[in-house]
Length: 431
Image (cartoon, rainbow, N blue to C red; front, side, top):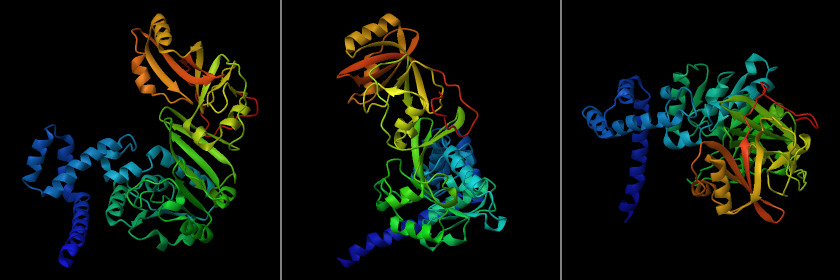
């Protein structure tokens, strides 16, 4: 029995070593001609596999073909994805280039006065380098990851992007010289047992280790899940920022020390490929302004505003009000062009009844329909298909509770006029 128990352990160790050897080959010059060939070859996957197997091992063939697929997927995150190296899970978890740039420029701005000799930043649990590569545009960065395969990919990505002054160490982050860095960034592993977790005390390293890092060097930035809750100490000492990318809230960052601009405040930042970034800092969980009236315009807060709990503060400053308590649609007779709001011009309001709504859409020839809902257990994509009618007009149907009933609001989405400012703090009462 003992021999049979040992076999799986030895097999796993062998596979780990074999995987590392394949990854080391994959990032070497020896693999580059095969990667180039596979990326440009138009033959079927079966033919490509047979061709590669004439020269390469099964593991090498799989690595080449998987890398081509991962690079295609990575293009939505990285502009130079075709030069980089990925693993499936590491790509999933990696910070995108746009979000990484936003965080890196904040670190650079906050550390502007530091002496050049101290302008070295540590990136802990660096993965394949989403944040590492962005920060390395401003600083010499030392990355740390205890997974040798992932560290190998991160080193290759530094080389591919020409960031020779930065490096990656395969070592447990607890051994990183935290006190020597001008600042440090940490992305705790939220899948320590292969199941995704949101709370910091369930991640690796845990809260006790992170608190020790903060005592050694207070200039820390901690990447968290958008839904993560933090301790009262972290709330008081740090600033928490929620970052959305193209309308989806991607991450929360807790900023400490020199990188914390406003302790015990929340910040919402919206990034998009089509406009300049926009940020709003305020007080969380303030009551929403409320009136029963529905104005000419309707506004939906960005996902980062919702996650940061800043709806009440932002609405009050922009003179907006909710028409139903706890439903995050705001309204006004004045048009607001704040980039943290998606705006709609109201065209028709009626009680929600599928037949009546469909007849109205048919009468208005709304053939291109977007359906959105708040505060109701509705399947918006399914409803959108059910309400499909012929026509060449475009509209948005917003469905929400109002005054004890469910209403359907047909509206026209307003084009956004973006500001060039990277941070927008709307004055009291200004749109």
